[in-house]
Image 1 (cartoon, helix red, strand yellow):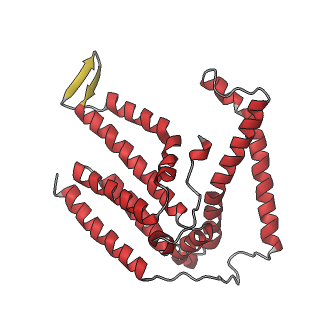
Image 2 (cartoon, one colour):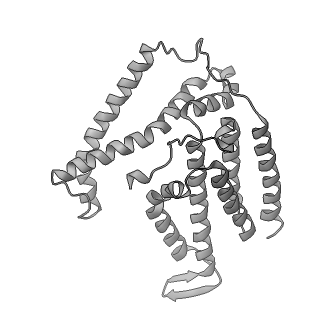
Image 3 (tube, helix red, strand yellow):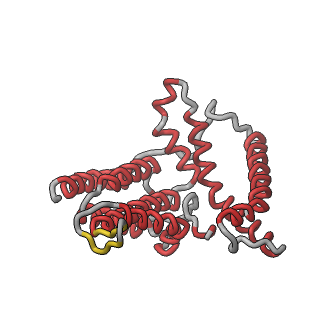
Length: 268
């Protein structure tokens, strides 16, 4: 399960998305996520699914590897769908038993929520899979640079966000190793009720926290040894610059958004 988390990982490549400016990708991802919550009919959802497929295609990232990131959310998706199916009120009743009833509208609502969550996870994974942690840091810092005028530590915030994303797969790998080590010593993580399962994870959490603090201390020491002093006097080996690729992506997102809004609010 832990190996299925793709958020925060990066796959080197030379695709269109790999060559695009990180700011373009982040802005496009934010716009798409906003559109995900605006979608309200079959046309708009079909457009979002098609856009996700196009992003997977031009990003040249393994489709199975990207979709694997949905497995950790499978339980959440199922629970959310079940809640909507049994609690969402509608007029077209398909099955009922006393106060409990299943309606067509509830099923459609559950499907829409599952699609929304899946698209958000996949788009977030595509962003990190095609963007290096350094590029993410520079992109976030550049987008938040207007906040520097009001003394907001933009560089430090961007650095913390990128480091957090980068260490997600590292901590997941460390958790998997600790769980296997504890299982080899007789620990049982699968049997018992929810409370017992939670208590069985205590031998995993303690060494995980110790390892996380140790890694943080090693990272801080490494940054200090390289004379890292934050944003003061810092230069970059590669400066961000918009290219023709970013122009094409921007035009495509603008056109897609316009057509999407028509499909969502006109074709109801």
